[in-house]
Amino acid sequence: ACTILYDDPELAREILGYFDWMRRTYYFPLIEKLRPEIVAIGEDMCYNHGMFISPRHFKEFCAPSYREICEVAKDCGVDMVAIDTDGNAMELVPLVEECGVNAMFPFEVKAGNDLLTLRKKHPKFILMGWLEKEVLNEGNRHMIENEIMSKVPPLLEKGGYFPNIDHGIQPLVTFEKMCRFMTLLHEVTGNP
Image (cartoon, rainbow, N blue to C red; front, side, top):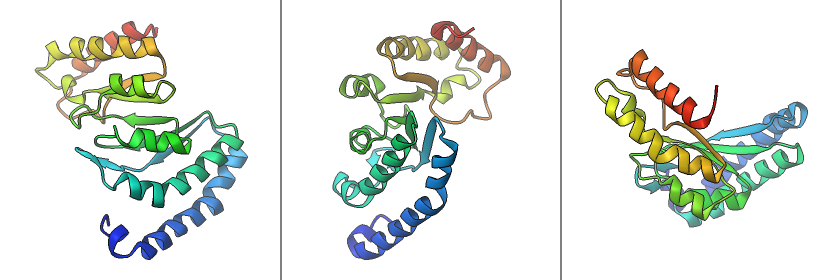
C-alpha cells in the first residue's frame, strides 16, 4: 500500500477521493447533527521507527482530508480532533497540528516517543498515554511508581496531558497490579 504513492498516485487519489466522499456523505452530517465534543480518527500512520509515508506524501495526499475534517469539526464546535496511531509519532505531530488536529494517543513508549520533548515543541497539543503498559505485568511491581512519577507530574504541570497506558492492558496484568497503578495515578492526578 505504501508504494502505491510512487507506482500509481492517481489510484491513491481515487481511493482517498472515495473516503472523502464517504466522510462528506455519512460522517459530516452526523458531526453537524450531534455536535460532539471529540472527533477521533483511527489512522495508525506510524510504526516503531516513524511514519509509514514521508512527510511530503502526507502533505500531498493526506493533509487536505485532515484539513477538511478539522474545518467541519471546528464549525460544529468540536473541542478535540484526536488521532489514534501506533508507533513513533514524533514526526507526525507537527504535520497533523498544521492541519488542525489538536490531540493524539496512545504514544507508545517502546516506539521512542518522548512527550516531554513534544510538550516543549507543541505546547497546545493534547497528549494522551505514554505510560508503558508492560510495567503493569506480574513481576514489575517496582516499575509502576517510577513510570508514573517520572512522567505524569511534569506533564500535568505543563497542561494538556491525559495520563494513560500506551496501549491495551496485557493478559499478564493482575488485579492487584492494576489497582496499584490506578491508585497511584489517581493520587498523582488528584482524582478522587
